[in-house]
Length: 227
Image (cartoon, rainbow, N blue to C red):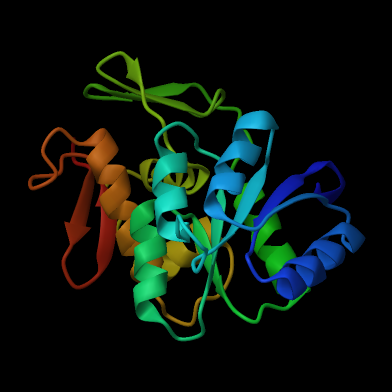
């Protein structure tokens, strides 16, 4: 998979950027590099990119704003590079639409594992379309429609919906969803799950204050339905 994947690496520190770029190339990735937010957005417009690795602290447009703008027209997976232990960076990235995050300094093989995991979430699952009220989930084409209109979901949002809807009414803990959707250990960090649920509800629910599809099982986690 790595040999066919193109990574856009957005990092303003030349030494850090060159080090990560070299490491990712050695791991088999094709790498495009950008030193600021404007260059990142231009790079995405000009070429096909499989994954964006995006630093939070950038000159001009910061990583949060780059991610928000990207999400207006693209569902490409985004992995944020955040300062160690900075909860504001982590939550800001997730709320802007990032699929994952890693803290700096990052070990290249850890980043490689995160890239591979986020790309696996786009793997096709050959199953017929399922209808839940006005929501139609097609596991074969990996498309979701509400009221006849196709929704733009990120790979992580789609994977979360596929996991939950595969077992309607079953309650999944946040820990189970971290294992099933993100595929690696976050040491109990449930912020990924909660932020992704909020973003997904905003896209599939008519009224997020009274969700019909993704419901909270208070004190436990989340379930799909009843619809």
